[in-house]
Amino acid sequence: MCGIVGYVGGGQAAEFLVDGLYRLEYRGYDSAGVATLDGHGVLHLVKTAGRVDRLQARLERAPAPGAMGIGHTRWATHGAATDANAPPHLGGDGSVAVVHNGVIENHAALRQRLLADGYRFLSETDTEVIAHLVDHCLKGAGPDADLAADGYEALVAAVAEALAQLRGTFGVAMMFRRRPGVLIAARRGSPLIVGVGRGEHFLASDASPLVGRTGRIVYLGEHELAVVTPGDLRVVHRDQGRVRHRVEQLEIDSGQVELGPFDHYMLKEIFEQPETIRAVMAGRIDHDAATAKFGGLNLAPHELRAVDRFLMTACGTSWHAALVGEYQMEALARIPVEVEYASELRYRNPPLCGHPLVFAITQSGETADTLAALREMKRKGYCTLGLCNVVGSTIAQESDGGIYLRAGPEIGVASTKAFTSQCTVLAMLALYFGRLRHLSFDAGLRVIEQLEQLPEMVAGALETNDAVRRIAEKYAGCDNFLYLGRQFNFPTALEGALKMKEISYIHAEGYPAAEMKHGPLALVDANTPSVFIMPQGPVYDKVTANLQEVKARGGPVIAVVGRGDTEAASLADDVVEVPNVDDFLQPIVSVVPLQLLGYHVALLRGCDVDKPRNLAKSVTVE
Ligand code: G6P
Image 1: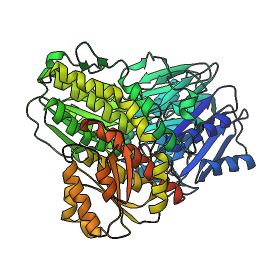
Image 2: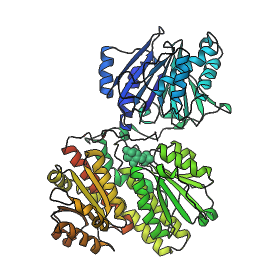
Image 3: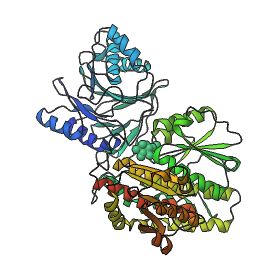
Image 4: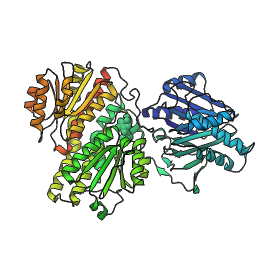
């Protein structure tokens, strides 16, 4: 949701800004714009509702020259996606241009005050409130505070004064018409990264726009403000004053953010899964002790040994991974698990006795509800672990310890490879905690053996692609789908339904297979396919009985089964065979044809697979 870019240096800013906005498209947005400042002190503002393509077309007609600028993709919160509400926004008479991620909660009160002070608003956005407020504080600092030859001190003080009045979250970047050559960026609850180049600096709300531009980056911390000029970067903390910043290496290469031979990022990411699962396990298996090992848990062995329950919290697909984790932990570690939507947990007050460990599971590491739930749990004194994909993300920074998913950038809005990496990490954690308790050495080795075969098994599941495409052709016209599975594959059913819903806009419901008798069975008819996830395992016979109940009512059945299953093949209308694995790993293999089914149906229905309507990759508002 929303993306920020900025540039100050010797090149043409608009070139980086537009390219960067294209790279940020995946986050979800509905308007875009740039502002540049040219060598004559003229500010160029070009913005539009709609896609970056439209912005690009406008820039071809009315270029925005200048060696510095800021740009934004906006996902509408305050005010519809119109040209007037499109970013950037100007403060005062155009003295300052601002782009902003996040939500300003007290924008209405601030707007009233600014209106009373004579400011005129051209948009309904909370961003414009920030722009006018900065202008107001600059004017309050004296007639020429923005020009003071004091190393930007007055400028920084005015911006800090404005930011201090904001309630809510923000990542902001701004520039000043009378002060060419300096950008100011700041964050509170919304990420910002500075890319360090030669005689130039870049700004971005995530690393993707920086790939191929520079390999050196600085993550801004909470309550930090950066003063960025072509040759200098200075970081000031709200309470500590000037702080030393750490330049880190950007570990993403351009291949990871480009499509390559694939038509869509979603398909590319589905096919990356054997590799991403290998990556998440690399160096984390300890054969000698028949367990898993993790570098970043930041807990002493006796603290880990004392953990007697888990609370897992997440949103969307990550929440489904948490449900898989619940079954895995119970099976391998025999530790009770509670899974809670982050949006619910943040306002709940669950009584947790004993020594719980809280897991925040998130691809982006920025989901607003997950972050808020994490903070609430930390405030209560619980120990927290972040399972994040995006390196340096807010949740990764704020958790007490963590495990990175190492899945590389996930660009398709519908999460795929992050899910299988999350389930793999959770299986490894279940092994780890199991081995701290009752799980024998031999049982541990058996789990490791299964884990190590997983990439190959997922590669085997990808071989279903052609068969799944044919099934998709048969059912793409249906308006409803049911997804049914039991035990470990109940969350797989939820995830399969979510994939279908997100990208093809078909109504799809996931249920524990036996629960269908308590409602969903009423939906079954000749036009409502039921997808049964039923690899061999302890509940196979039970699910087969559920399948027959659907068939008896005339519903078409697509069955995802283990290789060599002739029984299901004789009952179902369509069958997809996946490699056989132990039940605790089945979701990771069985979900693959479901991801592919969602993908092919969406494609056949002409949907924008990577950028589904109304959705965002990273949901940074409550
Ligand atoms: C959005 C995305 C989903 C994702 C969810 C949670 O809704 O579209 O794909 O599962 O957010 O995101 P997170 O980054 O916390 O895993």
